[in-house]
Length: 344
Ligand SMILES: [Cu+2]
Image 1 (cartoon, rainbow, N blue to C red):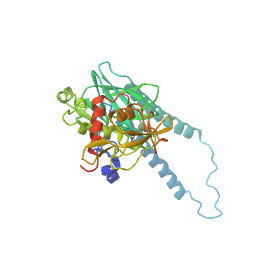
Image 2: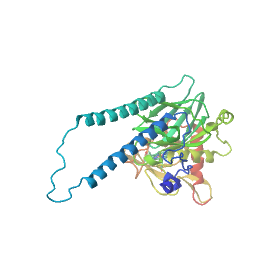
Image 3: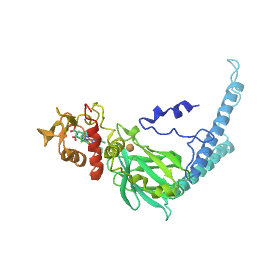
Image 4: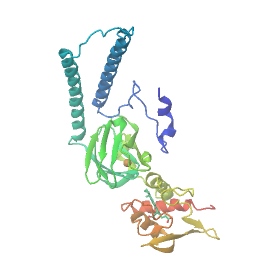
């Protein structure tokens, strides 16, 4: 019925993500973890709702038609106002159904929070408006993309450095709030190879809808190659572009249009001889205006402590700091910024 909405990739903002596959009933995305209980509970609740909707509306419509007043002076057919056995029945039966839903849901939520001892621990850090992942026994992080091994229990510490977010992977049937100052946990066992979605499911500001990460569930062999730790030293600009897309594109454009922050186009320019040089920028240092030349030091500082020099015209906007961005990635970002210089 809503297939056109689901299939249109434009509805997936700027992420060229695969449209979700749906299950046989078209209600849920295809299950890709061991949490099949969620589906059972969903369809049970759904069936109960449909059943009672039909019964209640049916009796209502029947009564409206059959017991309607047929003439103006027709007296009421009955003056019964109470029926104790009936009231007991329609109190006890719904109570039992609701208790079944409660027990089922409670057991499911306990399962999701009780991490098995053999799980691999990852960290998912949320901030406006992106996701960063840490891997077990690996110093490298990935941004906006996550790799997991099929059939291996994956547990997550959820961390937020600003506001409330929520970690929501529809195909894995997991959702948990990410709360600043409190480390929540969640786990699941991915059972299908492929690409899946991670959404933020708690409205967290302007670009909440762009707060997305692609989840790759891969084979043991592929996982062993640490796909999250691939960096092509021969092509740092390409790596820099990936960092840009994952972490910076929600606030910086590369085509000259100012967004929350200034566009990166024009940070580097070509001088008369065609050599790449840093542009002149007006910045505020403790409120005092200065003109500086863009160079590696300025960009590194802008990334690690953005408030040290505020770009004039954007002084009212704030940039989230990325103090842990590795040097090679900063250099990659700079190489990428250079490719945006006019006149190549
Ligand atoms: Cu969010």
